[in-house]
Length: 421
View 1 (cartoon, one colour):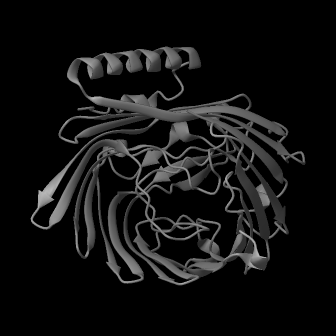
View 2 (cartoon, rainbow, N blue to C red):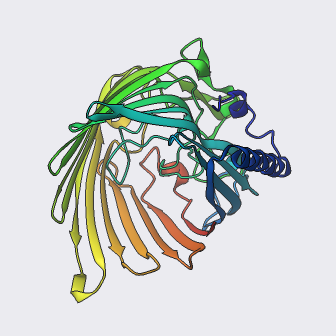
View 3 (cartoon, rainbow, N blue to C red):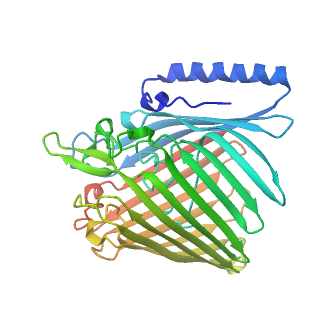
């Protein structure tokens, strides 16, 4: 069984691309030799991608560049024995030619999986490094707290770092109950001084923790996801180190210092599907976190919304989804997120063609200060092995928004080409 060495997370940038390649090939050779010797089924798949992003305007900070180019690679190795016990290993590599803080060597997955039956129910145990997703919303997932955000990979906070964990799940007729023990905390990634979509530089090397055990505090979480006809509903609780740091200013050096508090979070998620309608809810109550004024404040936040799908519009093969969501935070102007009172509206067009073409255009509107963010993207397969994605972001009326103002000049276009194998 794989036992994660936590020192790898402290040395993410100490491995050169050449040494990483040599290490992965050596590991593959060892795995294949073991598979051949023990009769274990082995498979692998992955992607190699090229990511280019262009920013239309010069930033306030002359160190920031207008062109960013990065190379990514993610490969999954899957082994399973005759008793259906399996091991999954997914290394991830990103090299950025402009912003060194975006370059990353990470283990997204490295876990042993086994399962069995208890009466009419089934249990499942995962040990190692894994990714866990909670939530139902499109704009932002309030309840999704297990994995740390890889912020420089996806500014929308959809991408997550691998999380060391022990995860036990019990699935029965009424739903799934899971318990998680999280023995190690990952620090959030932030753009460096050359990167875009940032305000002040965040010095991740000077991060501090409320707990004396720092990264090695044992976090605990539990979740029940139940089903009742068209309704899916989940309840969750988390106790441990926050994934969202409080950013404290160091005025002498002009940087921000992340501080991670111990928190408790209670979460609720629900989705009701009836014909063309999907209604969604996410809500949390959190205690122990500092607000924007660096004062500890308990608060609640919620997101409500829905999606309506028009099938076969104008007698074509295309489906059009209309999405509306509203997110709010009790802390108002003291909120530590950009979503304190925001309305999100989007249109998704699915072409239902062989290439899997999809176009999504969304608008996020701050109801308090009238700032607006437009995000448009298109995805399409070019062949069985190649796919293409493009997106554009535009920021409007950012002057009065403390979160959008620092990136108000960061309108950008991104192009992504991926090879699948």
